[in-house]
Image (tube, rainbow, N blue to C red; front, top):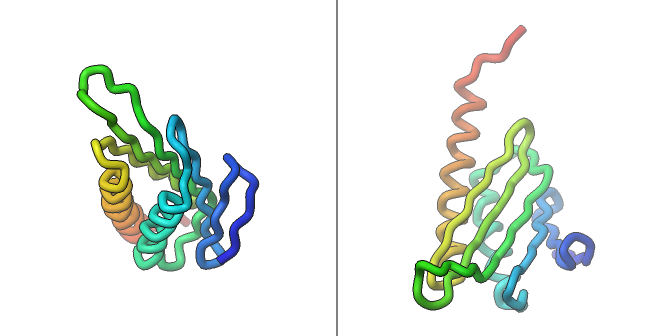
Length: 124
């Protein structure tokens, strides 16, 4: 696993084909958070298969949700695939729970994307 600093300060290389650019807003990007995001995004490789991932931006943030009490965390991912941008955003009172929900929803989005590609007849 290779770690480079380029985009938002952190870029992680996963399986030589998927880059995850991690950004933290209003919270510190700790090694624990980076490792957790990396672990969860690694789990998506089984759904991706041979699909080429062009870019992945993952943002974790503490929001100012004035209508909710306490700290509210937001996790957002934008995954750019060939011909499509998959975007998922979730908010929770626990940051790690928000990351889990983003991963679960993104897995469903990837499956729908693959089904759409298989079901769509090619034009000649």
